[in-house]
Length: 153
Image (cartoon, rainbow, N blue to C red; front, side):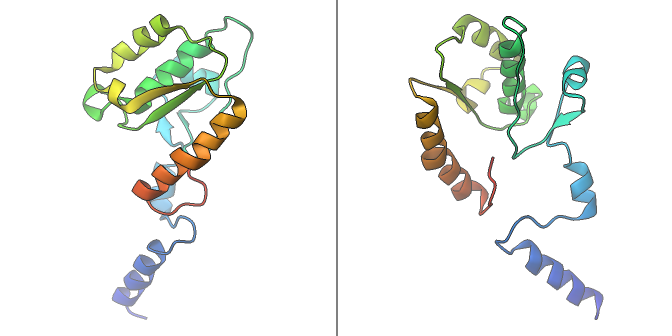
């Protein structure tokens, strides 16, 4: 089998809708999802980055600064690359009506004005309502714009 035939086979596999096909180099480069910018974050998570397409849980005692940590991570993900971010989108489901708008604004302000276009807070839903919103709105939107994927989040 010639080199061009092998390249053709690999390209055909990459276009298949069944899962994600990646090279060893791509796997290594993307193993941690997005990088954690601060050493304190790396220490807390025990890694240099957080994986994408998985759920991460942040838990701790009351007033342990979980919210500022989450806001900072989301600011980093949502900020444009020009402002040191990753250019992603963020949706924060506020289910307990406990977010401090002043704290959120203070953290997000560190990431430039464009972060506000890429980040939304969704309020007044139950846990079940938030799950339905993710399934009916977020996942279909992701699939439409990012292609077919079995595990979009």
